[in-house]
Image (cartoon, each protein chain N blue to C red):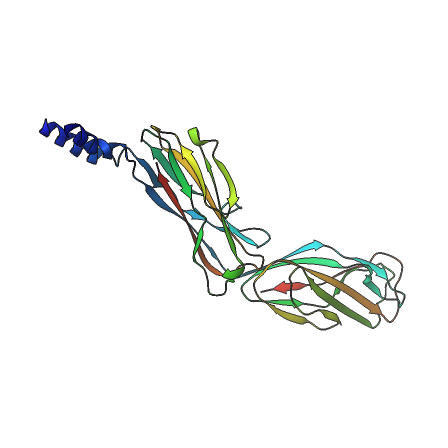
Length: 152
Length: 148
Protein backbone atom coordinates (compact mmCIF):
# COMPACT_ATOMS: atom_id res chain seq x y z
CA UNK A 1 0.00 0.00 0.00
CA UNK A 2 2.85 2.32 0.84
CA UNK A 3 4.51 1.53 -2.53
CA UNK A 4 1.30 2.25 -4.38
CA UNK A 5 0.89 5.54 -2.60
CA UNK A 6 4.46 6.49 -3.56
CA UNK A 7 3.78 5.91 -7.23
CA UNK A 8 0.57 7.86 -7.17
CA UNK A 9 2.18 10.80 -5.46
CA UNK A 10 5.10 10.99 -7.87
CA UNK A 11 2.93 10.72 -10.95
CA UNK A 12 2.45 14.49 -11.38
CA UNK A 13 6.21 14.96 -11.82
CA UNK A 14 6.18 13.10 -15.15
CA UNK A 15 3.13 14.74 -16.62
CA UNK A 16 4.05 17.68 -18.80
CA UNK A 17 1.24 20.16 -19.08
CA UNK A 18 0.11 21.42 -22.44
CA UNK A 19 0.88 25.00 -23.30
CA UNK A 20 -0.94 27.02 -25.93
CA UNK A 21 -0.34 30.34 -27.60
CA UNK A 22 -2.36 32.40 -30.04
CA UNK A 23 -0.06 33.90 -32.65
CA UNK A 24 -1.76 36.89 -34.22
CA UNK A 25 -1.16 38.86 -37.39
CA UNK A 26 -2.80 42.06 -38.54
CA UNK A 27 -2.63 44.44 -41.44
CA UNK A 28 -4.57 47.46 -42.59
CA UNK A 29 -5.12 48.38 -46.21
CA UNK A 30 -6.09 51.86 -47.22
CA UNK A 31 -7.81 52.62 -50.50
CA UNK A 32 -5.30 52.95 -53.30
CA UNK A 33 -5.14 52.71 -57.05
CA UNK A 34 -1.78 51.98 -58.62
CA UNK A 35 -1.06 52.31 -62.33
CA UNK A 36 2.04 51.11 -64.15
CA UNK A 37 2.97 50.88 -67.80
CA UNK A 38 3.72 47.23 -68.52
CA UNK A 39 4.39 47.58 -72.22
CA UNK A 40 4.60 50.77 -74.28
CA UNK A 41 2.79 50.67 -77.61
CA UNK A 42 4.23 51.12 -81.09
CA UNK A 43 2.73 53.14 -83.92
CA UNK A 44 2.29 52.36 -87.59
CA UNK A 45 0.45 53.87 -90.55
CA UNK A 46 -2.87 52.21 -91.29
CA UNK A 47 -4.16 51.58 -94.80
CA UNK A 48 -6.50 54.52 -94.24
CA UNK A 49 -3.58 56.87 -93.56
CA UNK A 50 -3.92 57.12 -89.79
CA UNK A 51 -0.99 56.88 -87.38
CA UNK A 52 -2.26 54.21 -85.02
CA UNK A 53 -1.12 51.49 -82.66
CA UNK A 54 -3.56 49.20 -84.44
CA UNK A 55 -0.95 49.18 -87.19
CA UNK A 56 1.73 48.52 -84.56
CA UNK A 57 1.26 47.17 -81.06
CA UNK A 58 -1.12 48.23 -78.27
CA UNK A 59 0.21 49.50 -74.96
CA UNK A 60 -0.50 47.47 -71.83
CA UNK A 61 -1.22 49.13 -68.52
CA UNK A 62 -1.36 47.36 -65.15
CA UNK A 63 -3.87 48.46 -62.53
CA UNK A 64 -4.21 47.49 -58.87
CA UNK A 65 -7.17 48.87 -56.97
CA UNK A 66 -8.15 48.64 -53.31
CA UNK A 67 -11.58 50.04 -52.71
CA UNK A 68 -13.61 51.92 -55.28
CA UNK A 69 -11.68 54.15 -57.65
CA UNK A 70 -12.31 56.07 -60.83
CA UNK A 71 -10.21 55.42 -63.89
CA UNK A 72 -9.98 58.33 -66.32
CA UNK A 73 -8.60 57.90 -69.82
CA UNK A 74 -7.79 60.92 -71.99
CA UNK A 75 -7.44 60.92 -75.76
CA UNK A 76 -3.85 60.91 -77.05
CA UNK A 77 -1.74 63.98 -77.62
CA UNK A 78 1.44 64.33 -79.61
CA UNK A 79 4.71 64.10 -77.74
CA UNK A 80 6.86 64.56 -80.84
CA UNK A 81 6.42 64.78 -84.60
CA UNK A 82 9.00 65.12 -87.39
CA UNK A 83 9.99 68.57 -88.59
CA UNK A 84 8.02 68.27 -91.81
CA UNK A 85 4.73 67.50 -90.10
CA UNK A 86 1.96 70.08 -90.47
CA UNK A 87 -1.10 69.74 -88.33
CA UNK A 88 -4.35 70.15 -90.23
CA UNK A 89 -7.59 68.88 -88.81
CA UNK A 90 -6.55 66.21 -86.35
CA UNK A 91 -8.70 63.63 -84.63
CA UNK A 92 -7.08 61.95 -81.65
CA UNK A 93 -8.75 58.80 -80.36
CA UNK A 94 -8.15 56.13 -77.74
CA UNK A 95 -9.64 52.68 -77.23
CA UNK A 96 -9.11 50.16 -74.45
CA UNK A 97 -10.18 46.79 -73.15
CA UNK A 98 -9.67 44.94 -69.90
CA UNK A 99 -7.75 41.73 -69.37
CA UNK A 100 -6.97 39.44 -66.45
CA UNK A 101 -9.98 40.14 -64.31
CA UNK A 102 -10.29 43.81 -65.09
CA UNK A 103 -14.00 43.70 -65.67
CA UNK A 104 -14.56 47.13 -67.13
CA UNK A 105 -16.55 47.56 -70.30
CA UNK A 106 -14.52 47.77 -73.47
CA UNK A 107 -14.21 51.21 -74.95
CA UNK A 108 -14.20 51.62 -78.75
CA UNK A 109 -12.15 54.44 -80.30
CA UNK A 110 -13.33 57.74 -78.91
CA UNK A 111 -11.99 61.27 -78.90
CA UNK A 112 -13.68 62.02 -75.55
CA UNK A 113 -12.40 61.66 -72.04
CA UNK A 114 -13.88 58.47 -70.60
CA UNK A 115 -14.19 57.28 -67.02
CA UNK A 116 -14.79 53.91 -65.45
CA UNK A 117 -15.58 53.06 -61.84
CA UNK A 118 -13.49 50.15 -60.68
CA UNK A 119 -13.79 48.30 -57.40
CA UNK A 120 -11.21 46.18 -55.62
CA UNK A 121 -8.95 44.50 -58.14
CA UNK A 122 -5.77 42.48 -57.93
CA UNK A 123 -3.12 43.39 -60.45
CA UNK A 124 -4.98 43.50 -63.78
CA UNK A 125 -4.10 44.50 -67.30
CA UNK A 126 -5.63 47.06 -69.64
CA UNK A 127 -4.68 47.04 -73.31
CA UNK A 128 -4.84 50.40 -74.98
CA UNK A 129 -4.77 51.62 -78.58
CA UNK A 130 -4.26 55.22 -79.64
CA UNK A 131 -4.42 56.93 -82.99
CA UNK A 132 -4.40 60.37 -84.57
CA UNK A 133 -5.61 61.21 -88.03
CA UNK A 134 -4.57 64.39 -89.87
CA UNK A 135 -6.30 66.01 -92.82
CA UNK A 136 -2.89 67.03 -94.22
CA UNK A 137 -1.38 63.58 -93.95
CA UNK A 138 1.91 62.61 -92.36
CA UNK A 139 5.49 63.48 -93.23
CA UNK A 140 8.21 60.87 -92.97
CA UNK A 141 9.86 60.60 -89.57
CA UNK A 142 9.28 59.49 -86.00
CA UNK A 143 6.02 60.14 -84.19
CA UNK A 144 5.31 59.76 -80.51
CA UNK A 145 2.00 60.22 -78.73
CA UNK A 146 0.86 59.71 -75.17
CA UNK A 147 -2.37 58.84 -73.42
CA UNK A 148 -2.78 60.19 -69.92
CA UNK A 149 -4.55 57.76 -67.60
CA UNK A 150 -5.38 58.61 -64.01
CA UNK A 151 -6.90 56.57 -61.22
CA UNK A 152 -8.14 58.10 -57.99
CA UNK B 1 7.66 8.49 6.30
CA UNK B 2 4.16 9.89 5.77
CA UNK B 3 5.55 13.38 6.09
CA UNK B 4 8.22 12.64 3.47
CA UNK B 5 5.60 11.35 1.05
CA UNK B 6 3.47 14.38 1.63
CA UNK B 7 6.45 16.65 0.97
CA UNK B 8 7.19 14.78 -2.27
CA UNK B 9 3.63 15.23 -3.39
CA UNK B 10 3.68 18.94 -2.70
CA UNK B 11 6.98 19.38 -4.51
CA UNK B 12 5.81 17.33 -7.49
CA UNK B 13 2.66 19.36 -7.83
CA UNK B 14 4.55 22.62 -7.58
CA UNK B 15 7.37 21.72 -9.97
CA UNK B 16 5.57 19.83 -12.71
CA UNK B 17 4.21 22.87 -14.58
CA UNK B 18 7.70 24.33 -14.76
CA UNK B 19 9.19 21.14 -16.13
CA UNK B 20 6.73 20.91 -19.01
CA UNK B 21 6.74 22.37 -22.46
CA UNK B 22 5.99 26.06 -22.47
CA UNK B 23 5.32 28.51 -25.28
CA UNK B 24 5.89 32.22 -24.95
CA UNK B 25 4.70 34.77 -27.43
CA UNK B 26 7.32 37.12 -28.81
CA UNK B 27 6.11 39.62 -31.34
CA UNK B 28 2.86 39.70 -33.27
CA UNK B 29 3.07 39.58 -37.06
CA UNK B 30 2.21 42.20 -39.64
CA UNK B 31 0.45 41.45 -42.91
CA UNK B 32 1.27 43.34 -46.11
CA UNK B 33 -0.11 43.22 -49.63
CA UNK B 34 1.79 41.29 -52.29
CA UNK B 35 2.79 43.15 -55.43
CA UNK B 36 0.07 41.45 -57.49
CA UNK B 37 -2.62 42.27 -54.91
CA UNK B 38 -3.76 38.65 -54.45
CA UNK B 39 -2.10 37.91 -51.11
CA UNK B 40 -2.00 39.57 -47.72
CA UNK B 41 1.08 38.03 -46.22
CA UNK B 42 3.66 38.51 -43.49
CA UNK B 43 6.55 37.26 -45.64
CA UNK B 44 6.29 39.83 -48.43
CA UNK B 45 7.94 43.25 -48.44
CA UNK B 46 6.44 45.31 -45.64
CA UNK B 47 5.26 42.29 -43.67
CA UNK B 48 6.75 41.04 -40.41
CA UNK B 49 6.81 37.46 -39.13
CA UNK B 50 5.52 36.68 -35.67
CA UNK B 51 7.75 34.96 -33.13
CA UNK B 52 7.35 32.69 -30.16
CA UNK B 53 9.72 30.69 -28.03
CA UNK B 54 9.38 27.10 -27.04
CA UNK B 55 11.03 25.50 -24.02
CA UNK B 56 10.75 21.83 -23.20
CA UNK B 57 12.11 21.03 -19.76
CA UNK B 58 10.34 17.71 -19.49
CA UNK B 59 12.25 14.46 -19.71
CA UNK B 60 10.57 13.33 -22.89
CA UNK B 61 10.05 14.72 -26.34
CA UNK B 62 7.27 17.27 -26.64
CA UNK B 63 5.07 17.82 -29.66
CA UNK B 64 4.24 21.27 -30.95
CA UNK B 65 1.07 21.45 -33.02
CA UNK B 66 0.46 24.39 -35.33
CA UNK B 67 -3.12 24.88 -36.48
CA UNK B 68 -4.08 26.52 -39.75
CA UNK B 69 -4.81 30.23 -39.33
CA UNK B 70 -8.25 31.62 -38.77
CA UNK B 71 -9.50 34.91 -40.15
CA UNK B 72 -10.42 36.82 -37.02
CA UNK B 73 -11.28 40.21 -38.53
CA UNK B 74 -11.80 41.56 -42.02
CA UNK B 75 -13.59 44.52 -43.60
CA UNK B 76 -17.19 44.29 -44.73
CA UNK B 77 -16.36 44.41 -48.43
CA UNK B 78 -14.02 41.44 -48.37
CA UNK B 79 -15.11 38.27 -50.17
CA UNK B 80 -14.18 35.85 -47.42
CA UNK B 81 -15.73 32.91 -49.25
CA UNK B 82 -13.07 32.91 -51.93
CA UNK B 83 -10.15 33.40 -49.53
CA UNK B 84 -7.77 30.73 -48.33
CA UNK B 85 -5.41 30.89 -45.36
CA UNK B 86 -2.04 29.29 -44.75
CA UNK B 87 0.70 29.24 -42.14
CA UNK B 88 4.44 28.71 -42.44
CA UNK B 89 7.12 28.50 -39.77
CA UNK B 90 10.78 27.83 -39.18
CA UNK B 91 12.92 27.15 -36.15
CA UNK B 92 16.38 28.08 -35.02
CA UNK B 93 19.06 26.49 -32.87
CA UNK B 94 18.31 22.84 -32.10
CA UNK B 95 15.09 23.25 -34.06
CA UNK B 96 16.90 24.62 -37.11
CA UNK B 97 15.73 21.67 -39.17
CA UNK B 98 12.10 22.59 -38.59
CA UNK B 99 11.01 24.40 -41.70
CA UNK B 100 7.39 24.23 -42.80
CA UNK B 101 6.35 25.96 -46.00
CA UNK B 102 2.92 27.53 -46.33
CA UNK B 103 0.18 25.02 -45.59
CA UNK B 104 -3.49 25.13 -44.78
CA UNK B 105 -3.30 21.93 -42.72
CA UNK B 106 -2.46 21.20 -39.09
CA UNK B 107 1.21 20.31 -38.74
CA UNK B 108 3.43 19.13 -35.92
CA UNK B 109 7.07 19.00 -34.98
CA UNK B 110 9.00 17.45 -32.11
CA UNK B 111 11.00 19.27 -29.46
CA UNK B 112 13.73 17.28 -27.68
CA UNK B 113 13.45 16.85 -23.92
CA UNK B 114 15.48 18.78 -21.38
CA UNK B 115 16.11 21.60 -23.76
CA UNK B 116 17.60 24.22 -21.46
CA UNK B 117 17.46 27.19 -23.84
CA UNK B 118 14.41 28.79 -25.32
CA UNK B 119 14.18 28.23 -29.05
CA UNK B 120 12.85 31.03 -31.20
CA UNK B 121 10.31 30.14 -33.86
CA UNK B 122 9.29 32.41 -36.74
CA UNK B 123 5.72 32.14 -37.97
CA UNK B 124 4.18 33.59 -41.11
CA UNK B 125 0.53 33.85 -42.11
CA UNK B 126 -0.98 34.35 -45.53
CA UNK B 127 -4.44 35.21 -46.84
CA UNK B 128 -4.91 34.50 -50.54
CA UNK B 129 -7.75 35.87 -52.62
CA UNK B 130 -7.67 36.07 -56.40
CA UNK B 131 -10.38 38.76 -56.27
CA UNK B 132 -8.12 41.10 -54.30
CA UNK B 133 -8.58 42.82 -50.95
CA UNK B 134 -10.96 45.54 -49.87
CA UNK B 135 -9.70 48.42 -47.80
CA UNK B 136 -9.74 47.84 -44.06
CA UNK B 137 -8.13 45.86 -41.27
CA UNK B 138 -7.45 42.15 -41.48
CA UNK B 139 -6.43 39.93 -38.58
CA UNK B 140 -5.49 36.26 -38.49
CA UNK B 141 -4.78 33.93 -35.58
CA UNK B 142 -2.76 30.74 -35.49
CA UNK B 143 -3.14 28.53 -32.43
CA UNK B 144 0.05 26.76 -31.37
CA UNK B 145 0.01 24.12 -28.66
CA UNK B 146 2.79 22.15 -27.04
CA UNK B 147 2.24 18.87 -25.22
CA UNK B 148 4.34 15.95 -24.24
